[in-house]
Amino acid sequence: MSDQNTLHRQTWVAVGPAGAVGSILRTDDGFEVRLPAKSAEGGTYPTLAVAKSALFAALGPGSEYPEFHEH
Image (cartoon, rainbow, N blue to C red; front, side, top):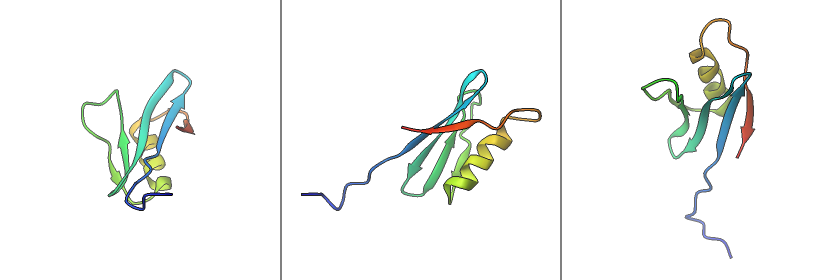
């Protein structure tokens, strides 16, 4: 049996050359970007693709595009 009210949360970890640089969490409102190096949240975005782009942009100029691993 499955409970139709259960929301399966998903998390993607962004990994760059120096290790984990951020994460994306699926929420009821969209995809929330979290940046451990920043004091503020990265924001909530409507799609995973947009959230990945926002996380990459927050890394700053010259950063390599991170790999995203779902957990």
